[in-house]
Amino acid sequence: MSQNAVLHLPGDQIIELPVLSGSENEKAVDISKLRSKTGYITMDPGYGNTGSCESSITFLDGEKGILRYRGIPIEQLASQASFVEVAYLIIYGKLPNQTELDAFTGKLNHHALLHEDMKHFFSSFSGQAHPMAILSAMVASLSGYYPEESATDGTGAFDANAARLISKIRTLAAFSYKKSVGQPFIYPKDDLSYCANFMRMMFAVPATDYEPDPVVVDALNLLLILHADHEQNCSTATVRTVASSHASLFASVAAGILALWGPLHGGANQKVIEMLEMIRADGGNIGKFIDMAKDKDSGFRIMGFGHRVYKNFDPRATVIKKACDNVLTKLGVQDPILDLAKQLEEIALSDDYFVERKLYPNVDFYSGIIYRAIGIPVNMFTVMFALGRLPGWIGQWKELMDDPTHRITRPRQIYQGQTEVDYVPIDKRA
Image (cartoon, rainbow, N blue to C red; front, side, top):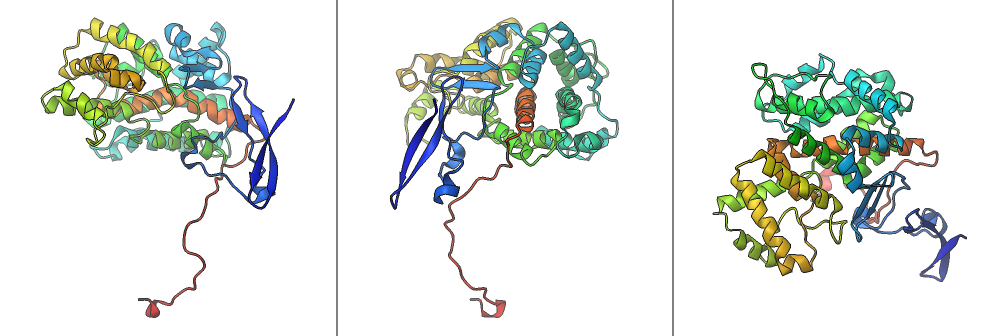
């Protein structure tokens, strides 16, 4: 039975608006006809209370600490699945059987190499170029290497382009790192897993090969799964916005990478390490900074605690905390920054101020610690986020393109500028 919300507007205007209900009983008021029928729009800066689409990919309940991909709890995927399986699940809507997984893995191996001409692009970047700048530019450039298949909306070549992106992005990311440290590129190997292949391309050199540690590979696999999708966040909404113009998959994902680059989004785990570096440089007194965090006038905030969406706990952090402890124990890493992180975690989890406000360590806190422990440099943290989030961007792009009712994204505004004035010739201007 359909329901309507009744909105009373000035001038005795009354309008009934349809109420929509999601499969998890989420509620929304459909205001798509509001302006055409009344002349009014709604205001929601940052779109924090606005549903931009209907999606069947990710369910997130911030109050209850629930995250599911295609209905499967993140805890189950994190403990049992590979990142390649999760990518297939998000993009195609189901877990692959063995035949499908083998075929998908074969496509990833087939598309792992870059066109040799692309190596010239890397040489054009400054040695100080941020890896995210390189990654976004190189992903956008893929449109030039597959022009027919990325023309118009590119849906006819979707399977090939999706495999190209998932496979090549790790090569592009590793090459971006090699460029930033002045080392020669290392090519992928078909006999390695997705994550092991990436780690080898990052850390091998021609004189010495790199044997990926299983502990490191497992940790990376987990991190990529936990970041694979997260509903309509800033970068995902950007991908959908760009895709709504029928931009290609490559162009839309490049836009998502740039949105992710911002410190308020994908750069959060980098901020955690930078904060810990600052605490260490100041003498390593954790208690001092805990007190500063409690003081509203100090201007200091502990990074990696709390979450805008999760009001109780971040389910990804619950999973990743165990992995973090495992990595630090098995690798035996001796690092004063990581020691400070463990001290900060211990104090904050037992301090009434943080417990009462439910300011628990989030996924950014633990992911930054793990990346540092396995040797990923800080300027690559956001690139690692992009590797993980790629399946979500691809799945969201596909979902939008498959929706016959989708429209080009075009928000409204309330104009607050000057009312009509006449043009003043330059010789009469003050």
